[in-house]
Image (cartoon, rainbow, N blue to C red):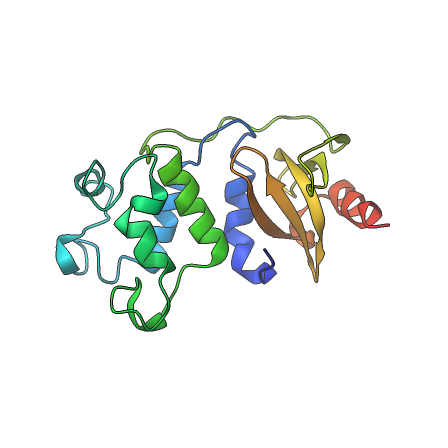
Length: 198
């Protein structure tokens, strides 16, 4: 999936806080999506449409069998389904094609629900290892490498290519591909990305 680097400035920091074997973290990855894309209509601090409030304190009311978020069943969860509908569908969220979730945000939401929609599970401390190539993943995946951001945090991800001013990295634990701005990666990781395309 190819997306514009500017949309992932915040996701860059978030992805680097999650270890490769960790679940999607609600507080750092999912809650910001709800705040940015859903709170205008689904927050007790603004308004609550359709009796759906996504504030931290109210969210548990939306999670469970027969509710808007069915743990482990993203494709059966009304919340996820409505976010993937076409702009002209009466049930699409957010409505009227405004402030739609990006493909990467949908991937995060889907992974979070699939992993159980936990409000507490999340990122482990990042590995301190320097950037270095390791193994090759599934067919179609690029080499699994260690990537370090400008803050010194490291993740392991498959190199999927360059896209404009960003590098496409697939996180093994979620299978989600993100585009990270090259200028937010360490000098070593920038060099690694450029040399991996040769």
